[in-house]
Length: 166
Image 1 (cartoon, rainbow, N blue to C red):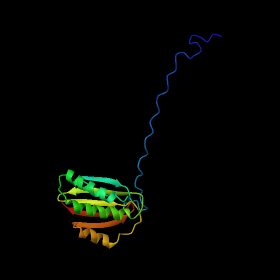
Image 2: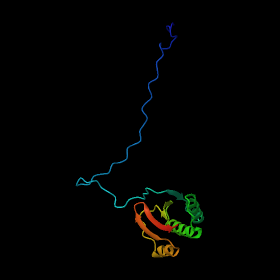
Image 3: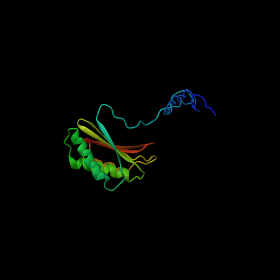
Image 4: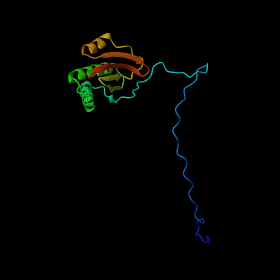
């Protein structure tokens, strides 16, 4: 049998089809309007920092985490040009991290920001529905010499924070 001039193949050869358009990620959900047509807003904003330096670290819930995190915060403050009181900073960070880790859950994160002459240390436990910590925690923070301290709870967990004088 004679297959023709192409020897059994199509002649001229077929070109492959053009590549398909890559799949685009879905757009974020827009805010849902309420019944009266207004946009629903959240009562509590997430942590936001503008106009200042800041870092954050996810933390493990281990027994050595408070000590390691205290050294990490001191090192970061030094990298920013401060000369912090190491014992005070390590004590404050250790207390914040121990309190947040004791709440349970799988995640703890530490957020550090500076604004001369202060540094803000905030620890988030990522456990929604938590009650406020005992008042003793805030008294212990105040005894360590912080300029201010506080706590609040929300959908993303409980936040503990302390403002350090540098």
